[in-house]
Length: 148
Image 1 (cartoon, rainbow, N blue to C red):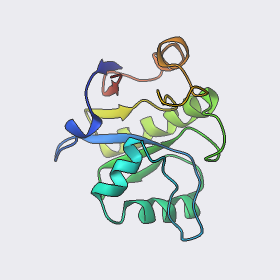
Image 2: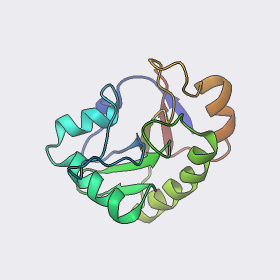
Image 3: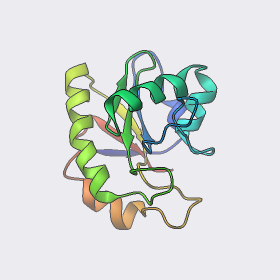
Image 4: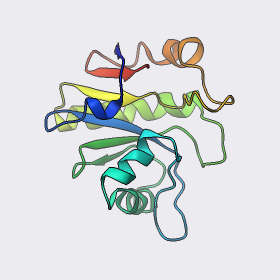
């Protein structure tokens, strides 16, 4: 894996896919619950139907990585529900599935928003101390982690 800086949306274009964290929660209207300050929430602002499309996929497939080809976005669950703390074990498990999606889509380069690492929330995973050591041997050089 490689570390890059910047906003994940600065890397998103016709040739590049992105990977965004999710929490497996769907609201009463069928929309995926997204954190208000997250890159996933930004996807909901950029793409009008994103949260409803994602919500429908979560309802049908469960809390698993989801490939949304229409948007060139892959999601990775980092929590079992919106109220839980991010889980390193869940992230590592789901990264294996994300790799399979990246392989199936024949992607050579993807950008991933730090899964489970929200700088605004103190109870989340610390990137350098916890996440990086746990995933550095899982992800190959196709994966670009947005670290700043």
